[in-house]
Image 1 (cartoon, rainbow, N blue to C red):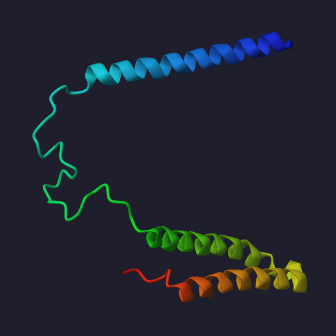
Image 2: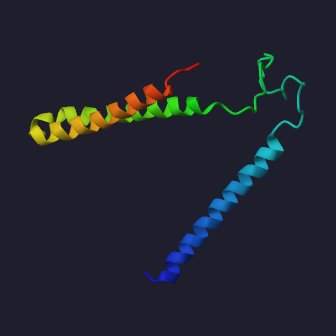
Image 3: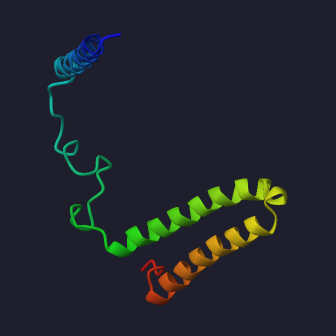
Amino acid sequence: MAYGAVYAYLGISLLLIAGFVAVVMVLARLLSPSRQGSVDKRATYETSEKTVTDPWRPFPVRYYVFALTFLIFDVEALFLFPWAVVYGDLGLYGFVQMTIFVGILTVGLIYEWKKGALKWV
């Protein structure tokens, strides 16, 4: 197949995709309700709860560090399950590698703990 035909198929596909997106956006605009609703509906929270602080105030960095720590140990669990399944085939080499991996994560956890990153308040 010539390169021109490949580019033609690509161009047609992109035009079809752009056309589909445009049609869906126009239909959504035409079919959506035009009435804005009450003041409560336009509030930050629709539950009629009054906000305690400014909703646009950024979260402290420690919350992100806490979330990333959870994510790291979640990924560690994903690595440990397949390793445990093939543990017998890996032998001492696989055991040493996983020990190093868990050791590095443990050192990181101890570092975060000493720095106070795991305190929620």
